[in-house]
Image (cartoon, rainbow, N blue to C red):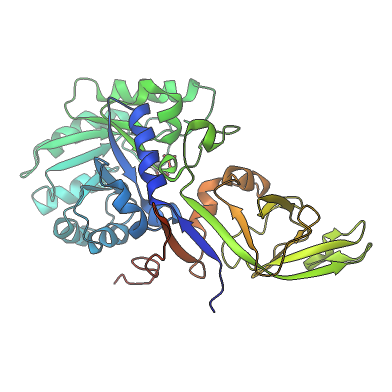
Length: 377
Ligand SMILES: Cc1ncc(COP(=O)(O)O)c(C=O)c1O
């Protein structure tokens, strides 16, 4: 039998979370951000739940191609545009929309002699200093794009550096710069990511770009998803593969990081950093067995980790251990690993089997497809 290290994906939760975003941003259209294989939740399992999104957004052409290969014809925005002129033929063939974040990309379209798509998105630098054209260049570049044959609409976008922060000053300053740079220009506006959807209604404008919220994860420090009415879309689980007695004074695992202060019953769980569970978690990080929190003891190995079963003495070999998801907030595990939940879900490796949970209970999902199966050219 295969190793039961499983990411259970709940498409109904994704659809529910999209509905929550719709409530928060009631006057905006929603771009569902599904880059990095739907933040590690798998495109093939999540896209059917995102049919009601007004469009999709990805980072790379390969990700857009994976969407089309799944038979999905929703509008798709390439958030980073393209780097090479030769990519434009693929953009046209796949029917993608483009972000233009640099004057060189505008020149690329002028060399092509037309817009490869009727709708383009000009990205404005407003304070993040990652991608975006300088504010003073915006009117001229906007006009050049509008002059391209085949163009119908040039929209205006920007991205916030600190939308999840309770301190609103940085978002306010970015909004101010964006509004000044785009004043008087036609086209729709799109700025808000998940943090801004929750914290900054003034930034919602014509469109919002929702990522992490769709997967039932809170972008806000100190506010877990259930408090926001979100449902976690992924539950990561593994099996207890051995149960051992560890005498007082003996240490457990690599580097002897943890030493038992008294005799312990220790469960060995079949998941490690080779599956994407973070090695950086501290001792005491909770893992659920039979609904009870059992603390991690000792370093996470590549394929295994060890837990103190004192809270669950009746645990048996073969029991399911939940690493995060339903009943164990991923936000808490990310904090124990000194990272963010985004990184945890994106880092799950190909060793982990994915299963879709349908409304009628647990069902076998398709085997890895699309990006994970290496099905792309
Ligand atoms: C340009 C852009 N827009 C929107 C998002 C979605 O962000 P979030 O997942 O915080 O909603 C991202 C994610 O990194 C992004 O890079």
